[in-house]
Amino acid sequence: MNDLRLALLQQEIVPDNPAHNLDVFAQMLAPLEATDLVILPEVFTTGFGASARTHAEETGGRAYTWMAEQAQRLQAVVTGSLVVKDGENYFNRLVWMRPDGSYSEYNKRHLFRMAGEHQRYAMGQERLLVELQGWKILPLICYDLRFPVWSRNRQDYDLAIYVANWPSARALHWNRLLQARAIENLSYVAGVNRVGFDEKHQHYAGDSAVYGPAGQVLLLSQEASVLRANLSAQQLSEYRAAFPALLDADDFQLV
Image (cartoon, rainbow, N blue to C red; front, side):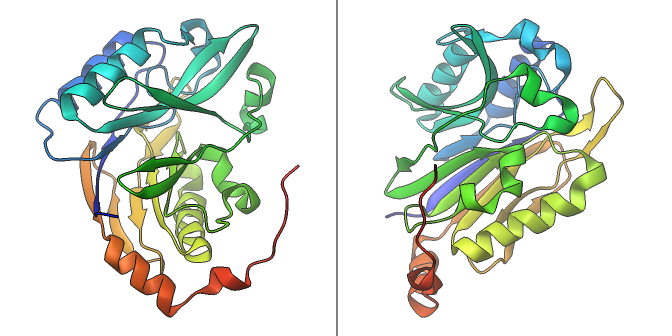
């Protein structure tokens, strides 16, 4: 397992304007070099608003093509979530796009009922585990962060990712829970949030972050920019060997 190079894209998302948002993210990615994984925020083409469904992607649609082009050019995985229409259902769906154009998908499990998300989207049923350069990775979406059972490391991942539209009003929760997920799961955690204001004038401070397996802060920023972090495979292995708490974790089944 080699070290893993991350690029976190923290940016404002213009509501209901996928073409503009894709252009902005493309400009951010244009000078990027030497990365293994690019992480975009939640619903990065539309924002989180109630009207986002009117811009829903079909599977394999414009944003999928855009992600595939970026992944191929950068020779890196590109991931983030989109509003996707699949049959009669709409999903807040994370796409894990590889450089060869193949992809995996994860539908958001925990839908944010305080904003009516559970009324607009279908709930995901399965976790997604992916592999990149020997790293086992669990990608999740925003509100999933509040539910530690869904994030529980059963010695099946090394890095958890949370893509989000998480407002400043609950920034304390975002920061503390990201750190807690790293500590309790003896894993790296990366959280990628947006900045700016949405259509309801709700503010987003960013606070995109990367935490080490002991909870140490490796990256924390409120700047609209491409944020870089390198994850050490050796440090992860050494920490888990010195403090193997997962060996004493309770066994359980998700139903």
